[in-house]
Length: 167
Image 1: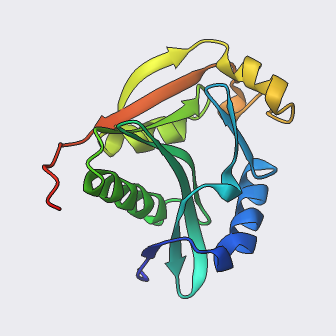
Image 2 (image 1 turned 180 degrees about the vertical axis):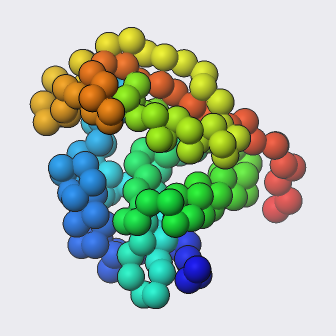
């Protein structure tokens, strides 16, 4: 398999980020836990394979936590998502944060499997949260993966080992 290189996004990457988010999410808008994000303006990690964009992870840091806002792999099941998530964990640990967390929807069974296999735990279900999110982003479909109606958000998190910072 070709090597995937993970690196922080720069301003030069912005058009490719907008393009990938638009193809994956219908726009650069991502709504989670009642917050509307323009994911193209968030800090991001890029996965590059053979000089081409292979994946993207956008995030925000608040308090003691690293929130993964979006994660996309251009080709699924090729190690890109895993590499992006591992890089996010490394970044969060290096910053001395206590946890990495994210939200997905109740229909996203592939994501639930993916995150749990990589050490994340289910910590909360927010019933009706996606119904509320549709008020901010009406394009969110009513039915998702496997013909499952989308209503709820599921929060997953990974507790991180606290390191003493050496300045």
